[in-house]
Structures are given as C-alpha cells and as structure tokens.
Image 1: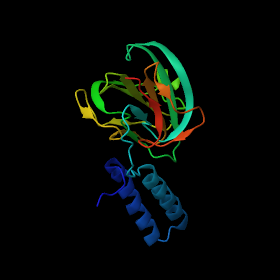
Image 2: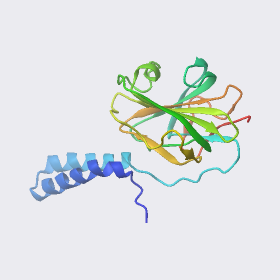
Image 3: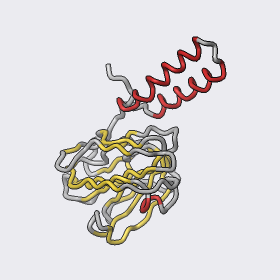
Length: 212
C-alpha cells in the first residue's frame, strides 16, 4: 500500500516526530505544542494523493494545485521558440505541491536557473526567481513549457524528469518546497479552459485543449 507522502518529506517529518516525542516525554508543554503543530504542517505540505487523470485526447491538465493568477500572451519566448500563452498558478503553503505533467509527450529540454526569492505572486518572480523549465513536445507535435518558480519561502526546486524521457499526462515530475508558482506555456491557438481566479488541481482540472 502506497503512503501518500512524498519520500523527500520524510527527512523533515521523522526528526520532527522524534523531537515532538522527546518534548512530550519531558513534559515540555509549549515546545511540544509548537513541534506537533509544525509536524502536522510538514506532513500536510508533503502529501501526495492519487488523482484520476483525464484520458481525453488533446487536453492539457493543470500541472499544479493552486489559483490561476495570470493569463497573458508571451511574445517570442527564447525557450519556447516563439509566441505562447502563459498561465500562472500560485500555490499557497496549504496546497499539494507535487507537480504533474500536463500532456503525453517527450521531454525536449530541462533548464534550471538559480535566482532570487521574490514572493511567487510577484510578476517579476517569473524572470528573477530560482526556476526550472521543462519543454515538452506533445504527441501531436505541439510545444508546452512547465516552469517551476520558487517563492519567498521556497529554497529548493526538485525535478524528476530529464531530456529524452517519455512522459504521460498526470504523472508526477517534480516538487517545490514550501510555497511556489508554476507557469505553463501553451501554443497561441490553444483553447484556454480557465480564467483568472479559478482554483485548479494538478492532473485533474483541464486548463486547455491543443489544436494539434
């Protein structure tokens, strides 16, 4: 039976459990409460529930849980290789932070850039913050980029795919620790299915449909 917690989280959860147990043993009430609360928060942050993934052809599912905070046209993006539509999803510390592949295809490029740690909802974050971009070519030949962007709290982006990998829609591909944003770039002619303010879940909600 699979434990619905990201394996990386146990390096934080186990020490906190031990410290909580020790503080309870020695009747350190205030410290026990603080540590127990922190333990519950960390377990919640690293939760990794199973998801029912849409099998509809041509649809693009959300790469992350969170709130759609921006939808804008992007001109001549260097990594994308042309114009695109960018949808930004802000993840609060209470969202599931496991990121998922938005469509079936193959990984053409993975690009990591270290940077600053501005608040993830800041427009400048997409340019200046630590980030990891994954360029995917769909089965129909369309290009999609998913970009993990670190926030003011996040200090570590994890990506579990590499160039040349074949990927499936909804599969887990990464994680950003403790607050973040995910941008997804779609072709200009893609049919967008979300609007600003919508709350989405990774792998579940359809955010767009490809023409090819």
